Structure formats: C-alpha cells, structure tokens
Image (cartoon, rainbow, N blue to C red; front, top):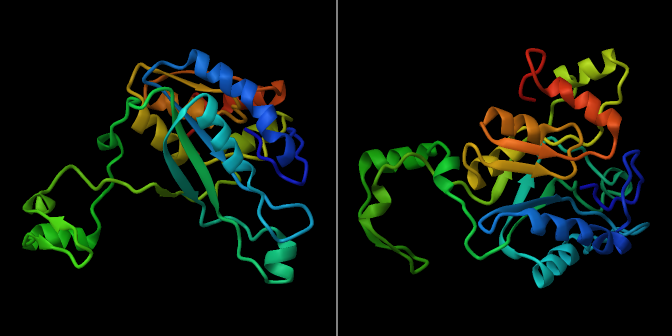
Length: 257
C-alpha cells in the first residue's frame, strides 16, 4: 500500500499518525478471503518524523496491530535496494548526519501458524566458498559459537537456502511499461517495485494454479509475475489510469521489468 510519507504523492498516502486506522479495514477483508494456509505479505517502507532526523515507528505499530487482532507474524523480511537514492536529502546529503534509507521491511503474516511455504522453491546458487567446502569435504565438529555442525552440512542439495535479507536493485526507469505509457499519454506509476520482489514471495508461498491477490496493484508487477509463474491473479487499483497503463505489462509488447 502507499507508505506513510511526509511528502504527499499523487496516488495518495496517509500520514503515520492515522496509518493503522486506515489500513485495518483492508487487513480485515484480506483475512476474510485468505485461505487458512494462505499468506499476507506487506511491503511497508519506513518514514521519518516530520522536521527532525528521527524515525517513525508506524510500520512497527502496523505489525503489532495486525498480530494482536488478525494474523500471526510468520517472519519479517528486509528488502535492500542498493540503487536507492540518498534520502532524506536534508539529513543525508546536506547535513550529513544520517545515512541513506535503503531497506524496506516486508512483513509475512499468516492466518494460521502453519501457512503453506517451501523454501526449496526459492533456493539460490551456492557461494564460491560453499562450493569449495562441498568439493573438499567438511569434518563434523563443534563451532566456536557452540553449534554442532554434522556431516549433513557437507551434502550437496539443490541450492542454498536464502536469508530474509533480499538484495534486489530497483533500477528500471525506461522499460517497455514506461515507454508504452508515455506513447499512450498515460501516467507512469511513480512507485514501482522490481519484478524480483513479488517473484520471491509468489514462488515461496504459492503453487502453480493458486490465486494471488494484490489490493494495491499500481502498475501491476504482481499480476505479471503471477502470470509468468502460472498462478491465477486478482488485482485492485483505485486509479483507472494506472490500471489502463498496466496492460503494457502483458502481451508481446511487455517483458519482465
């Protein structure tokens, strides 16, 4: 959903003070339609307190409200965007008293304590050091931290289990979607997340043929990802213009971006 930013965006956003109250009705409807083994993934960037170099706690307040009333917190993820521009400029580039804010919290909520999930769907390539360890073998022993590492650690599997820190750059600025929107005289949605972000969660938490719902579709990256991964999908978007432009995500004219 729109983040609680101090600077108002053209697609509309609620301030931090009223954010929990604004979001809870949506969350209630999401829980109502969610399967018992389904998941609710919420990408929620942080914000700063207006006029001072301190952080708002609104996204943590959202997480607390949702887990007290509607959901379990299955796990928190952190999306690191290495290409994020330095902001807020006053504190980061002018006074130089803070560093750039390049991480969003992505909350994974579930209706029950055991949602459908399988990390084998999102395995990554082994690191170079792990490849060497697998090649040379590993002697089972206790680590200095006290952990007992068994011989099973040196078995080759299908890949490495990813961490909950997702390093996905958001650099696409003149792709097919943007060019097609401009040619058609339609506004380009200003807050687009990269293809890899919904792709990770759609793979991790759903199976082919299941349905993905995005209540705040924007330019409909989630729909495109779901289509590519053979999931059914439903999206909602308040702006008809953004929805019209999202068609450029599909068909021969579109490619993952």
